[in-house]
Image 1 (cartoon, rainbow, N blue to C red):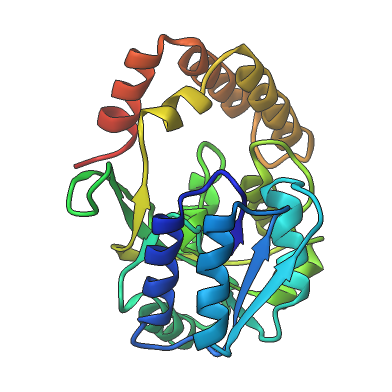
Image 2: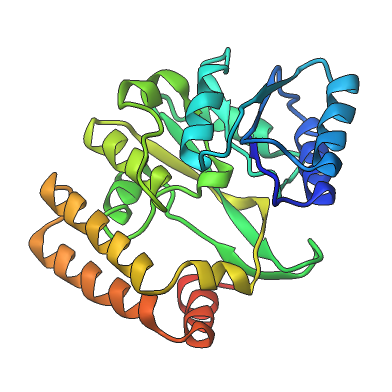
Length: 265
């Protein structure tokens, strides 16, 4: 987990409560403070430090962004299976238990994600469900057009991630960049076909995922996918066209598209 100063103390508390309330309790929780926090956030962290000895807090002197923070956090993870969690999301109680069972049942997988419920404000106000295909073959193909793992929900094998270089800098697409490198190296992905995470969203999310600069960064990523031959020329041109247009649409239209076309109630 990674937290930085602009996050909300109440959301961090909810997130940590959900992690420590799992039916399969984590043996270790690594929380990276990505730069100095506000006094309110630091108070929440120190409260959990005092009552949860399995919480290991890694404090860094400056904010470097999610990718570098996760790379630092992974260095401090002691176990082979590592679960990811955002500090403003809520893991449903059986998430870790269901993912551990998936690793036992589907031998050979390296990454296991789940569906997730997206909500505004109140966790009961579900606005959409982010679904993914189930099998390694389906997810490898799906990754040619869209992100093949819901990053805030993943559990992965640490050795498989590090073997492909771990989290490397790639603005806006650190996780997708990692998944593609893993897939092309032969890693197998699996997705549990039920929502096991509550993902906090807002209209701001759609604003962040648009604009000309975002469109250019995404175009650069599509060039990378084509350059390593993960996608064909036809897929590259299709992705580039659809995604570029989507990113420069007005915010209201882009938000509607995400909620209705790319997510399902």
